[in-house]
Amino acid sequence: MTRTVYLNGDYLPETEAKISIFDRAFLMGDGVYEVTSVLGGKLIDFDGHATRLQRSLNELDMPAPCDMDELLAIHRKLVEINGIEEGMVYLQVTRGAPDDRDFVFPDPETTKPTLVLFTQNKPGLAETVKPLKIISIDDVRWGRRDIKTVQLLYPSMGKMMAKKAGADDAWMVQDGFVTEGTSNNAYFIKGNKIVTRALSNDILHGITRAAVLRFAQEAQMDVEERNFTIEEAQGADEAFITSASTFVMPVVEIDGVTLGDGQAGPRALRLREIYLDESRKAAI
Ligand code: PMP
Image (cartoon, rainbow, N blue to C red; front, side):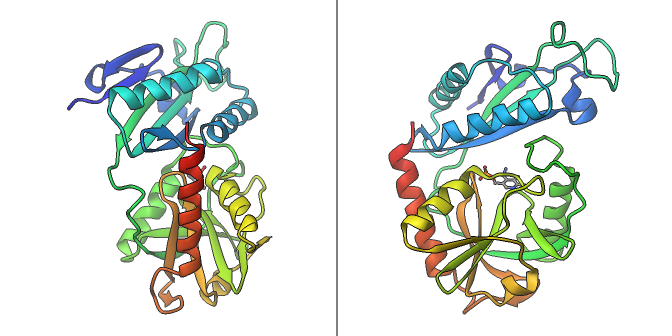
């Protein structure tokens, strides 16, 4: 079945959705995005994603393509048209396509933002637990990782480095400390304590991170937001990642060192269960 996508006000077959070669996202990576998961045909934490989108737009002085109620309606319609029970909705906003290539931002009065949404169907998304092997790589990204831009070349390279090394993903390290995964936030568990890097411009403020840390505290686990090294994580009882598309996913190996008995950790699996239960209840 051909997927229906959304482009600047129209719902179109994916083969008919076309964007200008002058679009700023194509020429300069001048765009932001969000990924919202769908469970049971409903959106998980839409408000969190919409709020972060608005923040990304503000930080880049980029006009919003529409208000957030309209955005919700578009998400819902795409989920319905494409019959998505489990999967994701991807959204991209770019600074639009001016008449010519220029580093200077175009006038927002004459150059309107480009808004694109598309779905990805992932039946079994919530049931699939694949414990991850992680390698560490240098974090050479730019200094505003709190803005969710479409500049995903280094994260993409990181995934390829992991694949080449026979692993599943990479955690990035800056000045000796783990920042985050290529497309997820990074954590370890020692005893009753969950440790993850504190929020700053160095990492994306994960929507899943916020929810999981809230639920962890409710489940009487301690949360410590601080810098940590790869060596400390290697010595932990468990480790895991979070993102909208993986929820909570256990990590069982870091740079060749096996954590615990090499099986998905019970506390990470419990956090995943709580996150999925609570998210399904609040889905819209
Ligand atoms: N960090 C990075 C670099 C990411 O790309 C992502 C996912 N887009 C995350 C963290 C997790 O964020 P979220 O939980 O909002 O998906």
